[in-house]
Length: 541
Image (cartoon, rainbow, N blue to C red; front, side, top):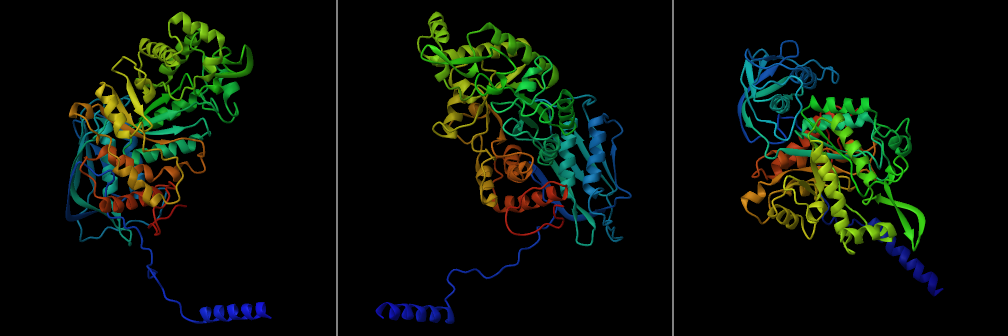
């Protein structure tokens, strides 16, 4: 009975609680999400821009891009004219015809002046991307030294245009004088851990162009698979790809990606990472990997390129020569990271080689020996190289080497200070690993935005050795199903940090422009994920 009375008492209390009004503590009143307004805000923010309240209209039927009378002409600019006309007027998107109010002046022409020859050109680290843009009716003017500057200027022009609710296309009177802060502004895609179909690689290249990135760092092979179809060593993909018929980048595919990139002012820098990260190479290159031992007996496992064999360097010479012939950029990424010495230590032949070379038991010297040979091969065939930071920490002597900083040791700033003090040029990737899944992408982009590659203790000469950085999308948990959504618009924060003036830091302003850029990419057909509750004028379909 005592138990029953207790239960009845508790039940009575619960009834009272549910019947009585409860206090609302720290509960926000409902606020209806608002539409992200398209108001012609630009991202990345130009170096210098003046926008007037004076506004003009544009009409699909009358607007056109033209060359200036003394301008150089080429396919890069020709195709950009067609591409940006379609983007501005949504030729393949919303069909609502923009209205042209009779009371407003109309912008009918954007005249483009290219100063340097651009026929058949490829972008490079040294390319000029400067441009000036003047928007005034009836004819605006875009002037650039190179076709690459024209591409950046056309992107800014397209972002300045916005559409009212009734479909009117508007652009304000504007002057822009713009140039990038850093020459190397990259996105790394890993296509080994998961195969990324060409469709999504191209979508990402489009997004890069919309955000003024200029380097596609193609981490094309790794331990998990070798999807690059080599002409010299066809067995590498035949035996190393996930599926040599379906999960493969043929020579034609690679040429397609390079050309698609070129037309958007994007360099393609391939990475063939050795001596580690090479498990997928073993079946296609017999003898390339090092046999591992248990005691005096091979255990059937293999790891890392065998640094003691001349055939290893013969293989690499032939492969890198092919890479030079296929990829026009003068840089190749040679990797050099995360080498585990255990297999080398277990191999008695490696031990004898170490003694012969006077390395003692310092396997970092063996790694240096291998890396030096690979760098010398790259130099001999006329290619500059980029490597991961371990190679610089291990003492490579060539100061023309570009090192990519990818981990904190002990901090990002300490690594940048240490490597630039030694005279090396560096790229920053640490802090910009966008493959890490997050619940709230609406806040983590702020961390990417606040990370400045030149904020570390050092002289101005040291800071000038930081030539740019890369946002990285490693492929452990990323494929075509989630690549674009996970990368964009979060990478836009990195884009602004690498393009805009170092004093561009206003988070409130950046938030508004990030929202608009996200909706702009959605309207252009990319499934860029939302940053917070709300909606776009045109949703992803």
